[in-house]
Structures are given as structure tokens and as C-alpha cells.
Length: 93
Image 1: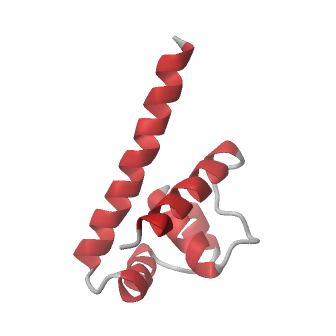
Image 2: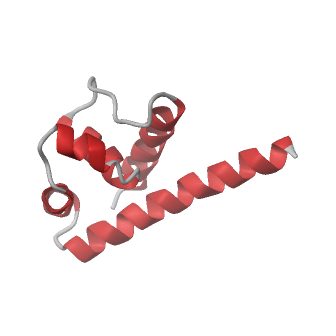
């Protein structure tokens, strides 16, 4: 997996979190789905009529080949977001 892609989705997830917590409509369908997966945004997925399993399947098909690898990738991006949160929290203390 290209780390630039993970960095891009991480940045988009940060933008979504700073706004209303949902992917931005101007992004591509894939970007919206992948940000929704990272943020566990089931409301967004339901609104666009995608199940989590379907979105994972798309991520796996476009980037990996297995849902296990896609799930691991999502975990990596979530960990990066958590590190950002902790760093920001510590800097305010």
C-alpha cells in the first residue's frame, strides 16, 4: 500500500472530524467510503446506501485483495488519527 494514499485518507479524516464528522461530498466516492470506514461512520454509509461490508469489499478490491488486509489498513489509519489526538491533547495540558 502506498503510504501517500494512507496519508491522504488520514488528512481527509482529520478534515471530516474538524467539520461535521462525515466525508465531504466533493471527494470521490472511494475517498468518501474510505474516510467513512476509518471514522466508523455508519450514518454516512447508510445515507449513501452502502453497507460496511460493501465498502470494505471496495477497499479490498481497489487496494488490497482481501478484507483482512483492508481491515488492517483501516486500523493503521485509525492509529495515526489517535496519535494526532493524543499529541494535540498533550500540547494543551
